[in-house]
Image 1: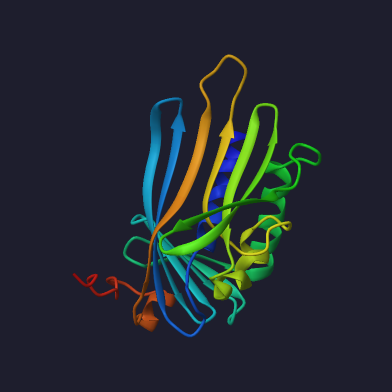
Image 2: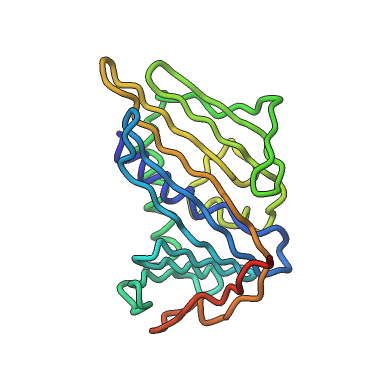
Length: 213
């Protein structure tokens, strides 16, 4: 179940991004897996959005999602094409991952609370769900309407309306340290993007200009 939740988190990570649909945007996410006090994995992910096109990278590979072409590409670090998959297959795989990670009856729907946070300059509302040994907390914003178009494809839980800016999944096996999967958006920035980021190319570099000082 832990591995299935990790996979679900990887899908969910692609959801948090632009401020408005009209502007190209760049997003930085920090992802972490911990077992007790031990950090098992930490990773930065960079995400780019231009209209209906989405590209993300962890520095080792790229995923480019193109609903306009009805397919997505998996690229290596140098942006060579590794594989191509249809949007229908992505939806099918996502639905299967959701079903496997959250078996029916295993976790109640996420419920909104009255708590709010500000993350990367955006306001979000805290949602929670819990059962013995498993809890989930998600902070959801409605300030990113352009990313809501990817929810059905990338696996945002159906009871959530909006985009997760932060979440934490905590597993507490009996007699063991907790397993924690956490992700947080640390930066959202407007910037013109090179359209070539959204197709297989070699030798591409980030089109994001340095942050203003």
